[in-house]
Length: 235
Image (cartoon, rainbow, N blue to C red; front, side):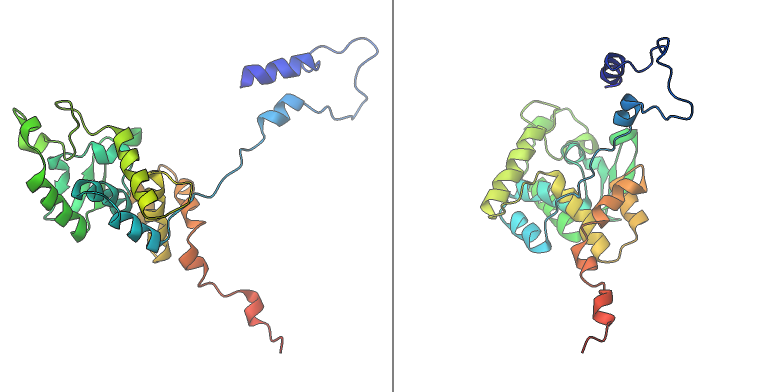
């Protein structure tokens, strides 16, 4: 990008020594086009989220116990797709009702909640989950969602397919992806009045600014704010 801008600046004569008789007028401001282009800000889009009814319909349309658990971990714990498929038995602490996310984005660890419904689903899934791929693996190291290859997790594209099938079955017509469940998790927590720094910790965001994007679409909280128009006596 910087090389392209440098080429633009060079082609327009910026950065060259002025030719005799072509010196800029005293006090005149030279517009550095390349610098101005470089500092243009990318438009910031508000993330798309599900409302609570859509989230409920989506989970209900999951075609199997495994698929419902996968989607529930995204919406119920705010996990990224890569974090879900890499979950191992040792990461689940059902006694304290938490999930340990280890060495995720930016190589950080964090702890998120495990809802009672999610813990029930995990126990049900563990009972029916195929165990033949666990041969020779110490149980705490067993993947919760193993793939077809020994020692490999469920492929990310398969989780995407599961999500989109559930979206279609639920009749949702929004342009969404698996990450929308994570955004919805954060937005619905903020709607309930959960402190934004707590949400930041649950999501594992480096900056509060990233988390604040979810607050911009907290429709439940926004709808409770009284408009100044309503305070006017217009009768």
